[in-house]
Length: 243
Image (cartoon, rainbow, N blue to C red; front, top):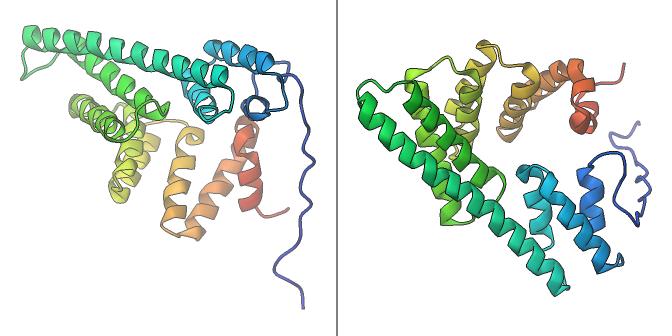
């Protein structure tokens, strides 16, 4: 009888002595920073280069080395993460003042464009605190709550805001509100957000609900845009039957 399982050969690990060239590669950088055989000075140089990388990419890499045996590595990582957090918190303070001032001048019953823009920026900034893993514990919960609060504030006036419907779904998922999150994702699709931005989150929801048939269908739909999703390609290959 044919076995339902097969053995796969693990890919060879390519040890690198220098960060990958030709553009930033997150996987290669993580391996490089965590390779304790690489001289500390070289790893510090790579960490300094992360200041040119978006925080949502660099922050998890820096958090990875907070337990490094090298004190220099640890201190630099702490300092860079602290700078990220302080920069976002300063921006939040500025937007809170702007939101309050605009809402007072425009009126609470009919918020205008300036109030709505400040609210959306606040949702973005609190989201970054969470998404970049800069807020931990109670601060993380606070960041998610505030991002959701300002997101819903904007959606009350702009229900057809497709990107915010996607954000709404991701935030609701963090609170375990699966049905509401799915509805928000489907609204984002209906409002014209590209399938490549929405279907991965819908598929993730279905997978967590153990609805594997729907997960497979969504992943097969995504396979049509596989060239646009290189990081998802191994997952797409897993869920897409061989042709």
